[in-house]
Image (cartoon, rainbow, N blue to C red; front, side, top):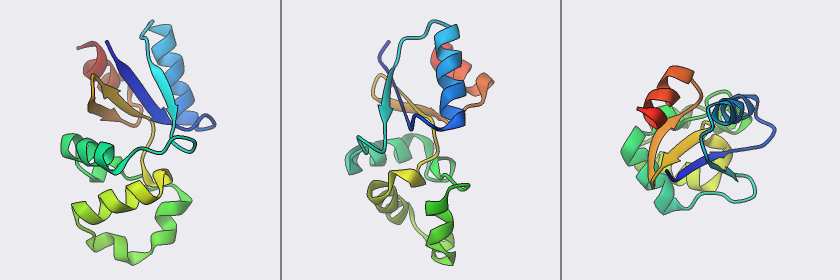
Length: 116
């Protein structure tokens, strides 16, 4: 299985997810979105798979800094914003065999998405 986990190393939720993956012996590649931001094309694919709402990191400073304009943004505007600032993306984001399958870390959701 090809699994990429996108996030940042100092994110507590990412750490929990990686510990869970290690404990369940799930092979993965961790990709630091600060050092290697996802491309616009990747983000478009992720939004197509999961929708833009679950992908928003609503607790981050980048999200709060946008202001009220974000409340009326279209999918295209969110995709553009995610591409310009990867900190707007909720983390971790799980991409299995090229398709985004889960975002955030809820054990039952990740277990179903990755292990069936």
